[in-house]
Length: 276
Image (cartoon, rainbow, N blue to C red; front, side):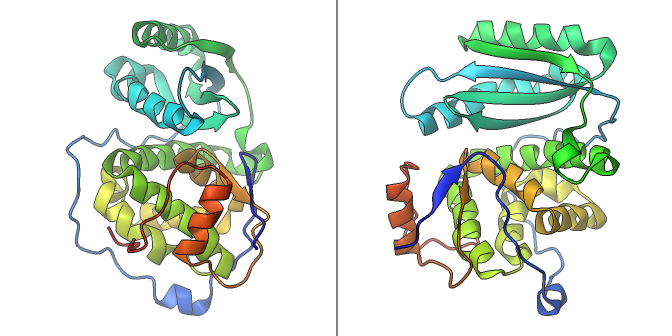
């Protein structure tokens, strides 16, 4: 039996992209987008912007029901004009029994950002249990160092926008995509483009809106920075897998056994395919 643990902390998947994998990176496939929402836009986030945190308490049901339903509740906030004029970027993850929003904001707007969160939470009945006012911080300190700070901030905002679109379009497919990445693609040390890009092109208007160079940079960052990939896995699944030994990828039935043992609250259909 494969012993696999869950954790919200960083997972390191040591893999190198083979020359074969590089040669087989295909050009963009024809686009058939699902969903009608406009792309929020991709903005560079200054390393001078402050970094703040807010935590929302789990209110009901299972941890996973709370996580995904709260993400849906927060969507109007994330798409609101006021929020996007003040907050320059954000990312989301599940911490124990609470949902955490990490955000970037200019010094001149930090009080406005705090008010926007508080007013929205009150309107929607969300319980804010903890807050850390915006301060100066090197977010990339453990993810490549200060020289990558602005690139990492941009990546965090971008992976969150793409993840929000995947979750909204087809939650089961999004969860299956990232679980099979960890327990099949990552486990076998295979390139990730062929696994992820069909879904990105199908469900993410944000990804499609990127230039070819920006798409390549995003996929390269996912592939070459294990800690960065962890952030996206952790967002979409609410958790990440640790202690996954390298070797033969797990079959869907065996993955479902892992999902049952770890109480992730879903199963992958046996006929599931990477291409939606």
